[in-house]
Every structure is written in structure tokens, then in C-alpha cells.
Length: 473
Ligand code: NAP
Image 1 (spheres, protein in one colour):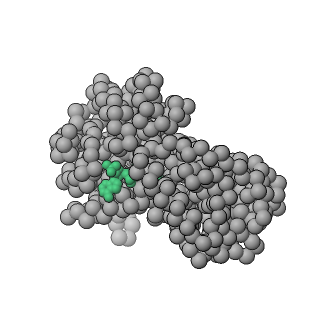
Image 2 (image 1 turned 60 degrees about the vertical axis):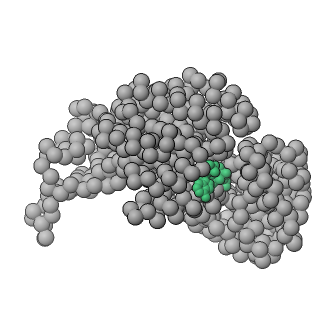
Image 3 (image 1 turned 90 degrees about the horizontal axis):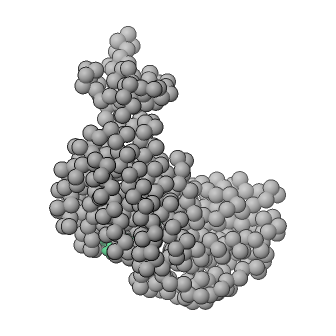
């Protein structure tokens, strides 16, 4: 389908999608989830042929994807996402205050860019699609060429399920091909863009989104370095275990995760470094372009004076090491993501860790491995400024899909506050509207005095819990 046809259909579905009740849209999502689960075996077989990510990982990803769909169904039926706020009129105040009522409304058609490395969870029926549909925004997905047939098959299942659940025609569509990306971002009917991919691609499309005569929000999840700091007492107590954990995390899925630990700060002469053991097997990668970019990135790292290969081989997985003086002199070593199974150990001493961390840019995650004897507070404060998720004694690969999850971070990890993971993903596709002195019969049900939906609301500054409601639609 052409971009113009898909967006015109999406525009035609906008009013009906926005008018559907939360319960109806939740039903759409649950029906899609059930249909994907029912087709999981066929979909995984196809996905494995196209991505070579392996059936175990891919079955897990289908489950994650259907869990996301069901989570967003729960988010909208719970009702607080709409942020209903009522301030009653106070004619006695100086100056007198009018009756004001505020909630969030859907933006309109959303363009979604599927990612290469999550053929289900960040693709056609992934978190962006689920969160936009959940709040009543039609979706047009630009599919990723790394899994074309899977994208078509998934789209057919999603379309059929939506139709069966009574969703308006045109509420979901897909487009293919590089040129459709910029056209989608620039189409007059597009009201927001959600993107997962490289920093360079995301930046190019972000510039198009804000360069429109009518700029629109662009929500990009981009590249990430994901620093890890191993403190001396943790290294002393469990260096071998940390080495194994690191190698498993950085080589998972051939290192093709935006949460791969890319830089690991270790004490000089660490047990962790000594225990690193990598089986270099040059795993298949998602596309020839991603393989070429990986090989190029590794060559550049190895060409930097002071960077040594300490384990593994050139095709990956591999572990490199350098001193803090080297990375402070070449800060790009701490800022350039090499997408694939490579990580750089940075050996620090008592005084050099802070200076090296100050050379870093923001990431999706930052991780601390410490024992109670380690003095971590100042470093944790620095890491909070650098990342959207701070982990203790774990590894950043693996992103739990729950209400509290935050998968984001300041630029260049993302272009915005929120991304497709976690309940706040829906906020990206909503805009606030306040009604002043509106007659009761013209107010949306969420703001009517007797709370017919029974949703949680803030009334005159006080949070009021959900009630049974009359229609709970
Ligand atoms: P990519 O090259 O940026 O491609 C993503 C999408 O953007 C594709 O549809 C691509 O189109 C399009 N695109 C790329 N450059 C463009 C440009 N200049 N103008 C218009 N469209 C453009 O990313 P990828 O190779 O699929 O994935 C690898 C990267 O994604 C890694 O850096 C990784 O860290 C990042 N990533 C991040 C996350 C996250 O959650 N933050 C998750 C997954 C991946 P075509 O493919 O048709 O060329």
C-alpha cells in the first residue's frame, strides 16, 4: 500500500478510533494478542528463517509482545492514564476561579518505525503499535526490511483480529521500503512518529518531523552504550561470576540489543578481567549492513592506541580493554555504540573513575555491581544523570514489561521522555485539553460530575480512587 493510501485510511479512522471506549479498545488489543499467540509456531518459524535469532528467544519475544498488548489493555481500562482533573469554580476566591476540567485526548494517526532486532516486540505489533491503538490513535507501520515476510504475515493477523474485534477500518496499516519512511513522517495526516533504530537514522527522521511546516512530536529510541561500574569489593568477592555474567549479557542475541553493556568500568588488575573467557564463534547477524557496521566499528576500536583485545576474535564476540587515560583522551570510545557482541573494559584506579564517567553521554541504562563495603553513593548520583534505568547487581539486557518500567534516557539515548516500554508509553500519543465553565452535557464522560466511568480522578486537588461507575466503558 502507498503511504498516501495508508495515511488517508488512517485519517478516515481517526474519529471512530477516538470515540471507541477504553473497554472496546482494550478488547481490540486482547484479540490481537490472542491471535498472535494462536499463530506463534508459524510466526516463530518464519522469524527464525529471516533473523536467525533462534526459536527459544523468538518464542519468548512473542510472549513479551502479547504481554505488552494485554498490559496496555489493562492500562486504559484502569483509567488513570487519562489524567482526569476537576477544579470546581470558586467564585469567592480573589480573583474568582472558573470551573476547569482537564483530561488527555488522542493525537491522531501515528507513524511507527519497526526495529530490526526485535521482530515481534518492537515491530509490527510491538509496543509502539499497542500503546497508540490503546488510546485511540490509528497506526501505520513502516516495516523493517530485516524481516519482510514476517512483517507481512504479522500485519495480516493484526488486521484480521482488529476487524473481528470491531475496530474501525483503516485503524492499522503497513508500508514498506526506504522511501516510505520520510514520506510517512512528512505526510499531512501524521500527528506523531515513534521510531526504534540507530541514532543516525532517528536523527534524520527527527529533523524531518520538526522541519515540517506543522512540526510533530518524534519519539525516538536510539543507540545506547549502557555503562556498568564494577566496584572493588564486588570484584574481589565475585570476579569470576561477574565475568561470566558480562560475557553472557554482551553476547546475547549476537549483542544486537540496545541494552547491551558496551563499556564496563573495572578496578585496575581486576579479578573480573582475569576471568573473562569468550568463545569466539562469529554469530550470524541480522543483516549484511549490520554485520558490516559491526566489523567497521570493531576495527576502529582496535585501531585506537591503548585499546587491546583481551578475549574473543574479530567477528565477535570479543572483549577489549583500555585504561581511563586512553578513554579520556579519546572520549568517542565511550560514546560510540558498536551494535553487536563487543564490550570495552575500562580499568580505573581510585581517582580516575569520575573523570571517565564525565566523558560519557546518556544511555538507556547504567549498572552498578557493589558490596556493602563499596562507597557507591556519588557514582550512583552520576549514573542517575546518565541513564533512564539504574540497575543494581544485574545486567541490563532483558527489559521487564510492567507498569513501572522506564526504557529511555536523555539524548542521545532517546529524543523524548517516554518510549514504547512501560505504561507511560501511552502518554506520547495524547494531548491535554482543559474545559472552562463547560455545561455538564458537553463534557466528556470522564469529566462529568458524577464520574459515570468510575475512573480515578483528582478533584479540587485531592486524588479520588476508582468507583464502580455506571457504564465503566
Ligand atoms: P536503522 O538503520 O536506523 O533503521 C531503522 C529504520 O529507519 C529502518 O526502517 C530504516 O529504513 C530507517 N532509516 C534509517 N536511516 C534512515 C534515514 N536516513 N532516512 C530515512 N529512514 C531511515 O536501525 P537498524 O539497523 O534497524 O538497527 C540497529 C540500531 O538500532 C542500533 O544502533 C541499535 O542500538 C538501535 N536500536 C535501538 C533500540 C532501542 O530501544 N533504543 C532497539 C533496537 C535497535 P530501511 O531499513 O528501509 O533502510
